[in-house]
Amino acid sequence: MKLKKIVSLALAGVMAVSMLAGCANNGGNGGNDSGKEPVTQPATGVAAAFNDAQSSTNKAKVVFSNDASIDAALAKAVKVEGQGASDQDVLGNVCYTTGLVNKGTWIFDCTINNKNVDNTDDSANGATATIVLAKKLNSTQNSVWSEDAAINKVASEINTMIANYLLDTTYSEKKGSETKEGETYYDYSYTGKASMVSVDNTDGTTDYYFFYVVTQTCKAEVLK
Image (cartoon, one colour):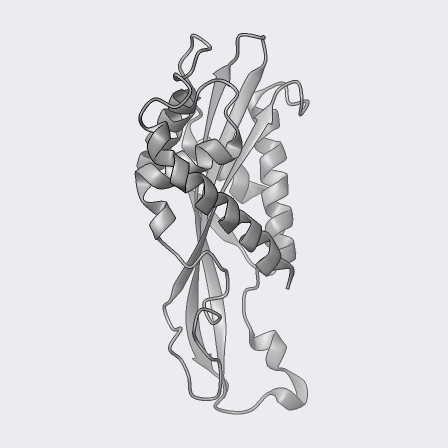
């Protein structure tokens, strides 16, 4: 399953950098040495762009919103990690300071985590699964010459992820002769948190850091 692969990679990165996040909080590489504070893009603008970029043909829809605590944690992480920090550095720092590294199963599909789907099991009803991702774009390296360009690029990538990996229901997997009355299936809903900060570097380029969280919630349904 492709989703398992990308989430496994994301988890590996999160767990690796989270162990270093404590050190980052003690000074990192000396802090942001660009001479300028990270600038927080109004999160409502980022969330709105992520929502608007989603194709109407996607099976699933993620409703993004802003979160003041994530905004503050991202701005702090970019400053602490210093100029040129990688997206994984920032990801680990934000996860550590917000506690996100300790939440969620890090695997989409709530029915997977030690839960068996059969005719009677609805133990995943109301369960949630979370994935946390970060993205860094450099104005020169990635040819994004404005905040809007950076936001739109990441929004497009998020739409591709949603289109390729997120399901709205398992009902479609139980059609035809496999569909049985009384059988349990799951509907999935998604919410997200989105944030972005930018910082001007001493070499004249700008780094744009994105941090977003997507949470899947399961609802058990019975075929009638």
